[in-house]
Amino acid sequence: MCGIVGYTGPRQAYPLIIKGLKRLEYRGYDSSGVALLNGTGLKVFKKKGRVTDLEEAVIGKNLEANIGIGHTRWATHGEPSDRNAHPHSSASGKLAIIHNGIIENYAQIKQELVKKGYSFTSDTDTEVLLNFIEDIQKNNSCTLEEALRIALKRVSGAYCILLIDQDDPTTIVAARKGSPLVIGIGKGEHFLASDASPIIEYTKEVVYVNDYELAIVKPDELILKNLGNEKVTPYITKLDMELAAIEKGGYDHFMIKEIFEQPSTIYDCLRGRLDAEAGAIRMSGIEKNIEQLKNANRIMIIACGTSWHAGLVAEYIIEELCRIPVEVEYASEFRYRNPIVNKGDVIIAISQSGETADTLVALEKAKENGAFIFGIVNVVGSSIARISHAGAYTHAGPEIGVASTKAFTGQLAVLFMVALKIAQEKGTISTERFNNLVNELSEIPEKVDAILKNAEEVKKIAEVYKNASDFLFLGRGYNFPVALEGALKLKEISYIHAEGYPAAEMKHGPIALVDDTLPVVFIATKDTYHEKIVSNMQEIKARRGKIISIVTEGDEVSPGLSDHYFSIPPADELIAPILTVIPLQLLSYYVGTAKGIDVDKPRNLAKSVTVE
Ligand code: F6R
Image 1 (tube, rainbow, N blue to C red):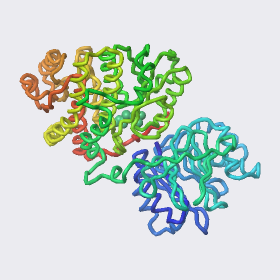
Image 2: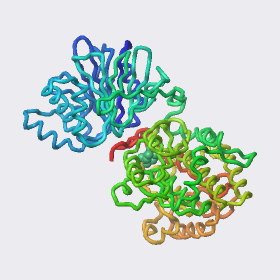
Image 3: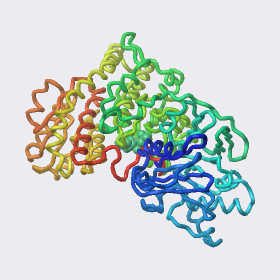
Image 4: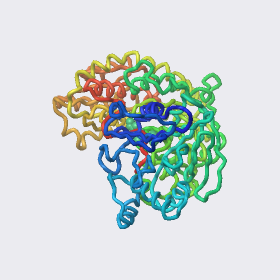
């Protein structure tokens, strides 16, 4: 949440920062701003709205500068407005700050500063932090770096901050705790950002700054220190990402590009791990920790949102294949109750971004209690990847559309391989069943491709129902979490109220909603529950609800009960969720675009939720 970019070096900072902010807009898009330093001093420009609104607002201004910081905001403290937009400048006008995170004890610090005569121009916690830093600098006659270090020992909360100082016009001082910071190393220049996307164009050498570290960044020097003022050696990583991966590549939106990428992202996820010919799965993170995993007393899956839905599918699969009890927890609930976590417990953390604050803190808590953490993460080098004891990346590539699509199918593919591998080692699966499932999994990219070839059929269905005010999504067994995911996707992207339910639960309440205007989406593929779900369809039909169904090719029953149906290739019921979710992703995309919504940046949302 909130994107930050900084630059110091010989290039013009403004165009580089604006380009970077556009790449980070998925992290927040209610206002944006830049602070630039040049011979004439510090200049701050900021504007409510998108980065393009900022660009318009600065037309005709002098933007010459070789150092600058920029921010795109997702509001926490203070409504989206010009004055609450970042950067903020200090009382003296010499310092500027951008911040991603929340300073939890800002109210107390603000009171102290108000008593000293400070006044504030915004409602933000960030402006308080900046004046606190400046006050320390003044009182202690110390450097900005020292003042920042003292300030950070007082504040609680999460932050990634960048600071510039008119009196030191080549240096950016940065610090992080809980919100990400990547520093790109160029020749005589440095780039700072919330993720690598603004940097990739200029250098592939990056340093991921750790929590409680400060960075003093000059064009030709990068110094990292801990809060105890000891130097830390920067660990340089080579980025394994291409520029094309973060561009739209001819598609109208990132979301549809990412939906259509799924045959190749799932293939990339399986590649090198799944060997259908040899009937084997190779995953070093599992192999090295197999005793821990196969002897787990219990597996707890911790995640949020779409990743939590992937966890629910995994609960069914792991219990079926490995016979280990599984609990799936919302990270935000887990962290604030007093959960029982014991030494023999394994935690599986699922996160696309690897930076979700609720998940991260929940994991820290579980780790303190001695749990073994296995991370399933998409963003390489992210915080969750780093605090996990072991893990497996989903290899879906950068996911930029705010609604998660390809990360979800990648998570399902990894979770499926994890379950199969543990089951094999534990002896809870026969060789024949193992080989069958490995074969089925290897065919998934092709089947996803076949579904996408018929995307126009889903578009036609979306046209019919785009003006509905509510939707119900129903599924059973492995497809119940897919019903939840279908409802979440539609809500996010089209602003239509939608609920997901286990199909049989419908008669315990939601059936009261059914009338001839309510579209009900059934995931009714051929599986153990097929006859049961057909009965549920009858119940909806009897009440004149509109039925849209996702059915298996060749099914002769469900289409007859449906107003509209979409066929998908047959698959084992354990693997089917990777296929059944695809038409639901398409449905939300086409309904959202038909309603004229900016589906990559739906209102109120942001990707990578780094606040609680
Ligand atoms: C929904 C969506 C969110 C995320 C959730 C967790 O489309 O994207 O619900 O799934 O915020 O994010 P990660 O997976 O990054 O931890």
